[in-house]
Image (tube, rainbow, N blue to C red; front, side, top):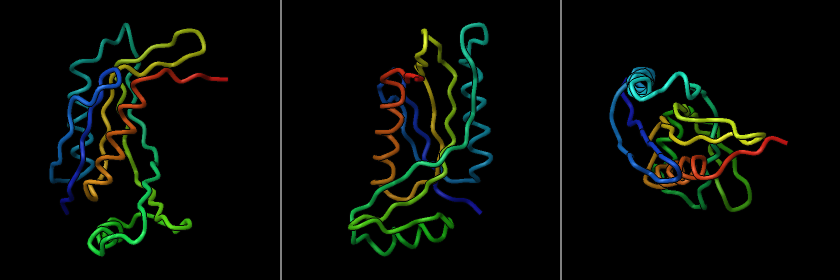
Length: 139
């Protein structure tokens, strides 16, 4: 069964691609990994494709069609105060990254996840631009 899939790409803190496609998420992820492989420089960077969970946050009340989409995708959700917190699976594909001392820097990456609505799209776009903007410090 095909779903709406959100593909986003960020380069050094800038959103350079964001599109919604329809299809099987497994197939879409493989296509995006193939795109990343074409740009990957194996002697300069790692190539990783990681499945993670992102917590979407919606102010209550939400539109019934949004809840219907969340439930049709079998996503876990919980109410926290006046918010609905949804656990969204996200595939993060990093193909231009490096270590500088104890800091890990993702320069370029893609995310692939289900599209729920424009609010989920906006939150994922903020996540991916933030992830490529500043180094991650390991303490």
